[in-house]
Length: 474
Image (cartoon, rainbow, N blue to C red):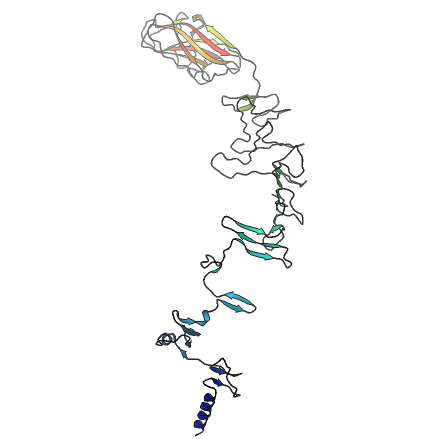
């Protein structure tokens, strides 16, 4: 009976609000704009709860129909032409304390619907600007259809640094670039580099007026390197050129001057103006064309190494390689002529059988014979050639001529014998000449002999020695 009474009272209240419904504990009327006005300070409203499968199976849902999907744990509403829409996806941003972050897995575009990166800003002009509190210092990006810029938007210097540290590079409003530590100063040239380490260098490159900043009209410098430390170690370099290519003819430092000046200039009050060093190549290479000079010096020259010693002279070989050698007195060519009477037989050399017939020829019934003559040359003489004149009546036998050491048969001059074949049968003198490619030098304490050795058989008079000509320099 009580339930029927409550329903009657509730129905009467609904009818009195002209189809507007107010659900409240205080019995207040619904808001004029609402068909259903629910008021509570400690209660909520529950909409129909369903699974994703049951939600999508609702037949002919009306636009605006809302349910709570227990699978996605979010509210969904229906929209014609789109279908079911998750209200959780209506915003791509989510709070995180006092911060906010983007929940979208894709990219964000400003002035573009197809962003290619996490944040794409498309504009012609300044697209991003960061400013100081008073707005006087501004830095950002500028783009147009032909170029892109990182710039300051006001008249202020642009500083660069790493690791949240002090300035490492600066581009000032005068278009000067400074690299290194400038404290609170600015570069004084188009490019100025400062360093405090072992490899620290300073580079000043000229501006369009060919000045280094001093305004001088003479002594202008294209590139100036200065090492300001007065306690630099060995091989400290104000300017260093390194080419690490291991192929081709690379160059570490190039100097070129189009006029009559210097392509490379080095000056040292007490050291070396230019220093060159190599392990297996050429430390210094100089080349001149036309009527120029490959090397021109004013003052003394010191050429060390390669056997340098007091009194030696610099001597070149055929390839131009120079070494220090002891001076040699000027030599002249000399000749010695030995006639038949200078030769005689020799019986005191083992193995050999020396036979002399008339002092001018030899023949015997034995298989070998030898004539010899003492050769007197000054110590230090260089023998250049030996020529023998002979008449040979035996076309089948050969004869060997040699310059031998004393008591050494057939070992030749310094171990090299002169072997010439017989000229064949002839009735007039024939010359046989041997030229030494490397002239042997006569040493002291050794006697030499000119020998003529024949290999023949029979009792015929086989060969006649007419004369021997020895040419030497001394």
